[in-house]
Length: 570
Image 1 (cartoon, rainbow, N blue to C red):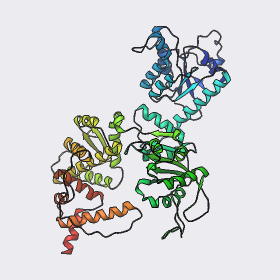
Image 2 (cartoon, one colour):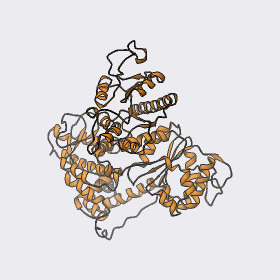
Image 3 (cartoon, one colour):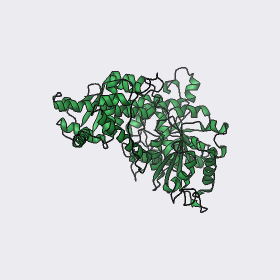
Image 4 (cartoon, rainbow, N blue to C red):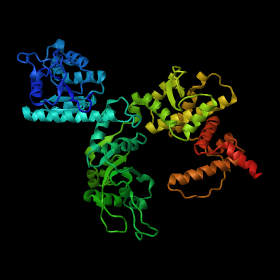
């Protein structure tokens, strides 16, 4: 690929010479990949007169040109190839005429297999929808319908070359470890669209089932691609009582209502940045009107004041609902729907439709689980107890192929388990997969920690590999389903006393309450995690005990500390 300051290199694949001659005459800001052995610029070549142009005329010559020029930046590909049968890629079920008409699509298919990251621009002088439908399925980078006027066509091609090269440069500059795109062509197109639409001032709408990664896409991709210096702010509209939504979005001044204070809303908090309105379909009708007016006027007012404040955000709305249906059913305003720019909507596929990415996602999640505290601390404790030296990190491996001499800890998953996961329908999508891997890795790590502390695990190589039990993963999958039979009512007689302690967020307050529940149950059961599990959960007792122990540690509680506290109080 090209580097900054170097002319982009273009390969033209065309059965004729018109596009090549056009490029050589009017697009001389680029270099061209050819099969020629001469090291000279084509339009300056002394042998140009009478030259049989050595760009690629068919698939075989495309392979030769790319082998000679692996640093090609973009391919300009014609669609219709009037070639003899022996030079065509013949499609099963297509006659000769159809194969010629769709030859560009067949070449594109081969390019996607051999060079999945190489940008391709499809060129034609015939605007036929069938071409576009076929090319969309292969994640083509751009279409262009040429008009036959050389100057105009050269301008069109030049702009598209600049666009795809700039996009590729941005992709190369991406930091690793952000949003996981995988290998599917559907996600490749989603990435291109998200990065392009992010650079506009218009709103965007993200559609997708719960757990498909809409918030992550907005934060890690769209906000970053906007180039805006302000913060990323997200608000879950479904989690806010309807009478408080306006205050949350627009802010308040003293006197707006009883108890109102001087408070910035989300639009002000996200000024100069990106605002994600999650679950936009739940927005109350009166707030839909206020949002519509704010988007139209590019300004808003806090509740209780008349002062107009500038609306300076990249607005992204997300939903798992069908907004079109909501408009037809009069539950969502048609004018607001139009203002949200539905033409710039993106659809995130469910995990069951991108199972080719499953293994990559699992590997990413296992590494990510132990990258931050407090889970990193637990992995560090295990490595210290096991006498393992080196960087504190985790990775996932399939079967028994893990390198026992590598650093960190490898969580091994059997091929049988992988096959089971590939057959699962993943109703909770990527979020369900991440929670599954988190629970499985943490519970297994607890068991491994007990093993090394008891001295029952020998050999450093063995201690670096922690197999994930197949039954545990199946139990976790079954426990996470909501379409199975009910387990029955929880045990009676549970009673704890809670003291409310305000925090900056609702989750902070709930975490404090959860800690109180666990502390009191620990006291009441004399630190017996099996007894605690029986009082909190239904289902498989050993699995539940591991879950309780996992959550106990996630809350920052330590059994030794609580036992010392009990002894000191006696």
